[in-house]
Image 1 (tube, rainbow, N blue to C red):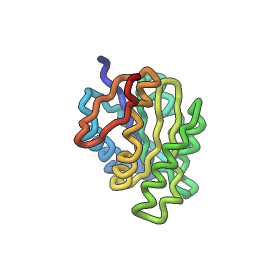
Image 2: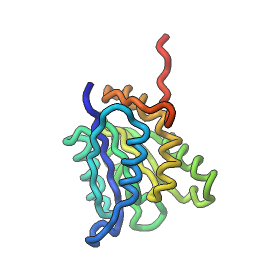
Image 3: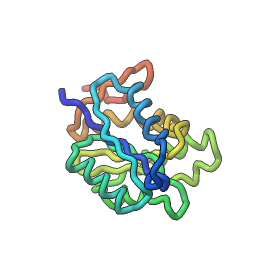
Image 4: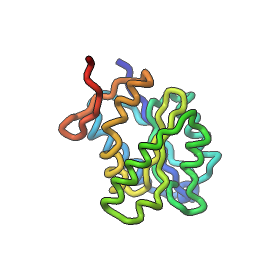
Length: 177
């Protein structure tokens, strides 16, 4: 069984300012460590909020570093500098709008401003790319909502089999007939 490579990309306009502690990317790693019992390797980057840099990073992680899953955090709001969804859409072969719809619906249970979020997801080659919000609490809420579908999506793309601690998160895989 091959070890899954999972890209974690933190998008922040403070990333290029020098001293920056990335709590969002670390929150994703912590959640994935709780969820996954199969071996996985993080491919981790902190990059500035620039569409060409985001797109290039996603392409590199999907095409060269063979990440079956790429999770971004940040850059999904309505501010002019928030361009992560545009960068994701620019590099994906097909979009998966259900991920964004579910994340917004889940976030609306906690904050009315969830309608301002522009999270999305898409497929590039053998990679699933999922855009998450930037706050660790919101990251957890959104991943709790969408992650049950992610292992099966990776299965359908012939990626590595992601095993989960079902006492923490229960992935959905259809039963064989």
